Length: 67
Image 1 (tube, rainbow, N blue to C red):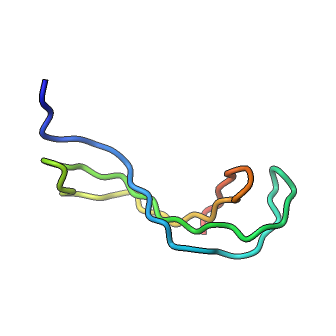
Image 2 (cartoon, rainbow, N blue to C red):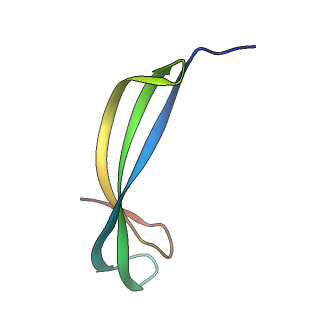
């Protein structure tokens, strides 16, 4: 079976974020900043993106906070 379209989410790494103390694990580290978006593709070419948001993610436990 061959699919020519698809739905999914895309993450783009934006680099280092702020130094924060995580509410879940309690460690103080530099968090990673990422941008996420849902997308519709046709033949692996993105045609539409929606639901964009920027997050900072704890580098130890993976807890995410919206920026």
